[in-house]
Structures are given as structure tokens and as C-alpha cells.
Image 1 (cartoon, helix red, strand yellow):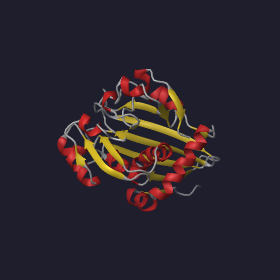
Image 2 (cartoon, helix red, strand yellow):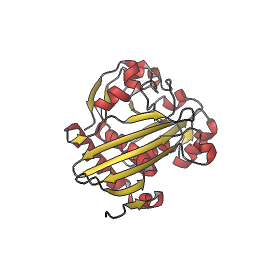
Image 3 (cartoon, helix red, strand yellow):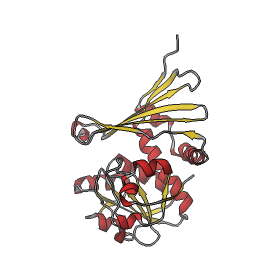
Image 4 (spheres, rainbow, N blue to C red):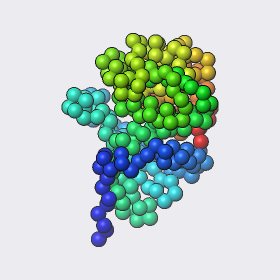
Length: 263
């Protein structure tokens, strides 16, 4: 008989997971990935019954850690009082396959995703105060504001959403202000984060100031994109080149070349 796996609910994960501990762990994971010491096949994605709803299955093995994360993305969930994105992580013993832990990975995913952007920002930008634009107003918008503020001083944060009320709520939560349009948010921004459910571009390259850093986080399907061709004609860096070239609609549809990986 095997022991029952440890179960961690969202409250436990929030209590145990700190950004200070996560940032160096993410940095090391990116280094391990680029060095070829991580086994991470392309994720499996399929559509659920409700239109626009998706299930992502994401396994990985690094060192003595074997895990699979299941993520559902259901656009209709907010009307039900539920998050759009819900994640569950299963941690296994790589030698025996025995489940070691099952955890609510919703907050972990929100913070981990933002931590990747933060690690990239720290590597690519100096510590002078930065203007931040966020296109999107959901959980990832909030986690990005938190993570980026940990690595660079933010002197101006603008939030845009197709729904103005959502932008205003998000802006109030993160100490920014709502922009009336995506262009108004992006103009003069040093760092731009796109975390939308858009399938067609919401960020146009002509809006970007020279040298702006863009974190394109949304558009999780090969046929979806958040950035237009002009934006993608710039220097493109990925956390995982193989995944970006096969899963990112921004890369695939624009024909952009991934120059290098963060790690």
C-alpha cells in the first residue's frame, strides 16, 4: 500500500509560496531547460463542450521532480463566480510513479507565469523606474503587476481591457489607472504585458516606443495571436523555443524567428 498523497488547497499554496523563493527557482529552471536538462513535451490541448473552453495537459521532468499540471480555461466561469483559469498539479515520484502530492495550482500558475516575465525583465532591463502597460484585466494582469514590481520600480501602470469596468477594477487593485484604449495604455510604456483571451491582435507594433519590452503571455493556441506582424518583427526571445515555434500563434502566424531563450 502507498501512502495517501499530500493535498494542498489554494489557501495552503498561497501561504507556502512566496515570490522571493519563486523567482530564483524560475531562473534556475529556465537555465536547466536551455541546457537540455528538462524533459518537457509539448502540451496537449483540447476543446471542452462550452465554446472557447480548453483543457491543457502539461507534464515535465527535471532532476527528481516529475509533475503534470492540468489547466482549464473557461471564459464563462466569472459569471459563475469562478476563475477563468483553474489549475491542478500532480507531483509524482519519478522512480515509482507513486503520487506524492495533489495541489490547487491556480495561484501557483498565476505567480509562476508572472515570475517568468519578471526574471526576463530583470535580465533585460536596468533598475530605473519603468512605465508598465497591461493589456488584459484578469488574474494574470494582477500577478504580473506584483511580480514586475519586485524586480523593477514602476512609476506608472496603465491597464486596458475590452470591458472598461474590468480595467478600472484591475487598475484599482494594483495601484494603476485604466486606459481608454489599448493604444493609450501602450504609448510611451517601457514594458508591455499582454494577458488577454484575444485571438486577433490587440497590440500593434506602431504603438511601441523604441526599446520597449513586450511580454506576450496570452493567445495560447497556434491560431490565436495578440501581437501584429510589425510588433513581432522585433527581437523575439522565448522561455522555450520549441514550444514557442509549435504552440504560439504570435510566432507561427507572423513567421517570426525566435532568436534565443531566456535561459
